[in-house]
Image (cartoon, rainbow, N blue to C red; front, side, top):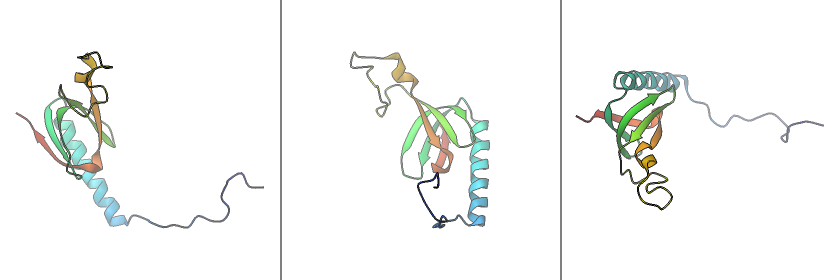
Length: 109
């Protein structure tokens, strides 16, 4: 008896073409370099989905950037701290964004 719930061979339904994979890799490297150069600065990020976010670029790894949102950010999970009014945590909301979703990064000066 097999230990896997599926029998038979997997059937490939999609494979990224190598030239597209190379392009994605180059884009990710470029975005990563730009973000490293502007770490701890206030930026405006626009995603390929049309969302715009303002905040401070606080961290970057191989796949995500982490944006500390400005106070009053309306999409935070706890904007008013458990319903008791102002919460110091609402000004420390960190929004992770996927590098492949970024369309523009602009410095806010």
